[in-house]
Amino acid sequence: MALKQALQASMASSKVVNSKTLLTNCIYLEDSVIELFGITIYGTPWQPRVDNWAFNLSRGQPLLDKWNNIPAGVDVLLTHTPPLGHGDMMCDGQRMGCVELLNSVTKRIKPKYHVFSHIHEG
Image (cartoon, rainbow, N blue to C red; front, side, top):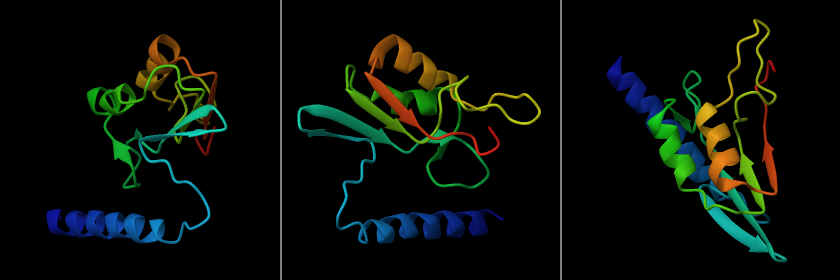
């Protein structure tokens, strides 16, 4: 089982690396920042663990470590995962957003805009 998981992780990683070579007319932000026309934009793909998806991390310190890398005061923050309480409610009423992201955004980063995806069921 461990070998199968390691193989799947390796394949997923190589797909991400290989897919980046196809991005020839765009800017891909993975834990990085860019300034365009005086607007500072930071993008990060991480999310709380969901099955065996890409860019999964455990809730708590592993995700907080990623959010702590985001510079305070960016104009636009792009995240894949939503903060807790924003587009994250499952059909059963459970919230799936990230509390560490919510706290980081509201207490430290304070972007002018936070653009994020949603929980598919949300």
